[in-house]
Image (cartoon, rainbow, N blue to C red; front, side, top):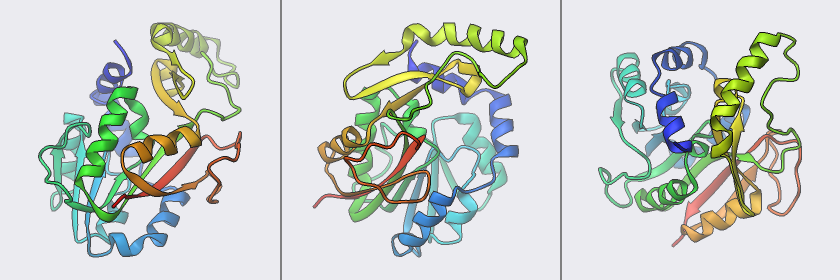
Length: 251
């Protein structure tokens, strides 16, 4: 098993779907800022919400978009969204294979909550190319991704949790995924606190993420940090857990 298998199993768990639907109802300040800055690309346009999950940002998007479509590779997530937002369209679909959509189908594509970090490197690259294919020229693609330069190291337990039993469980969960961790010169797949360190997450540095985007025919890349500030590609930021990337389909 690798990151793809661990992620798919995790997001099909009934308790995870339930927890996400009942506890995730906010939009991040970075998202609010992006929606305002790129409102002309969303208002009255066709929008694709990849990894729609529990519908966390659906109210904000449906208030702007003329045509909203949400996709997720979790059958249970899609079922829950259909029950909660009956007037909207949701499709069970894997972002690495979106052949159900024609070329240049969307004005704005969003992959929120670091969803792209739940994929293997190979699947991530395939997904970027698929998103570029379905995006219209001058359309906007927005996503967030974990920062490999973040100074907070990923560990096998929570150093701030004084409950010994909890950390024993964390360590046992970590041991199940430890051998599946990957470290390369440009990215890493490491254990993550999600699911008690029994989850894997993709981490990448800003310059390497920009290279991935350019190789997938995206251009005009802008990067927003966790303080809602636009940042330079080459600058080293150790205190931003992840970044938001905003880019266009290259002509």
